[in-house]
Length: 419
Image 1 (tube, rainbow, N blue to C red):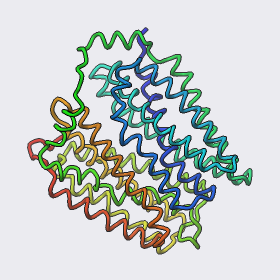
Image 2 (cartoon, rainbow, N blue to C red; image 1 turned 90 degrees about the vertical axis):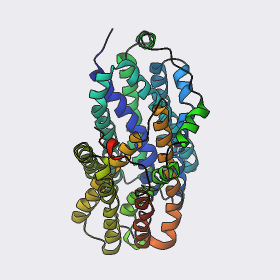
Image 3 (cartoon, rainbow, N blue to C red; image 1 turned 90 degrees about the horizontal axis):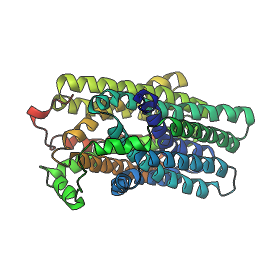
């Protein structure tokens, strides 16, 4: 029985976003509220990016064994179990070790789910549907980010006030997210196209070729100016990666520790709701601008839009502005991030060429995740040594190397327009 993609594509990508944002963003906030220091939070939660760095290594296993539908349902149920364990572990004495182990397992499960979902998307949708739903799936993923970093954080903050019990508040909030995944698992179990459709679609396509891994790697590394390309991917968001890991900690930290001392609910609204909405709007505008003027003309201005608003955090660390001013400053910074990140994403597609372009894109996104992970590992240690004001000044300075790489990467004029 054929089903409309509208019945499952939005929920599949919402389900993809929820674990990712809990693992990489919400974990930072609940560890802070549970008394873990910034160095430990930044170090260990940055390691959670690793599965997305190396997921291409087990991507072929998902392709070869079983069906994408089975992988999707299995990983969804496993993710429900992980979130339930995380919620329960926050009530234990040694919560940090147990919850971190569960988050690590969850990160590998979530990365595998992403592989299966993208494969399922390509399998059951024809090219016209794939193009049409590309914006829909992105929107639903962003809605999951708002749900996680906005609604869940706000809910935990309200529960903190009502229950006067921080661990229990976060147990209930994370438990609620597990319940949502359980409902989505049941829904997808009933609604996703069956295995027979998987096999039918596979039989209608060409028999897949075995892609030699070494050939893929060597063809990627043989690109013109590959050194500049790798430097660009690793450094373009270096400063932003440092900022991203500490931004919510800065908003939560007490004023005597150099932070703004916002409540958990305020952070959920400032950073997880209005901030994410601004990021989405920036991304939409960025796509429009590139489609109109081309990547070559837009890359440098959009890189400036990504990096220059970091100065707002220097101001906030120094002046400790009221909440009414924090909202627009964080929103503007996130808008610039969304606007500038669009150029980065389009460039990764631009350099994915030839017969292995899908694999090349996977390699680029893995390197991109590595570029986010490495700065995050040291960001908490640096901040605790020099304080928030100097840390944010350092963040601004660390945007310069990425800006310099823009003058060395290959970008031909005739190929700059990407719609």
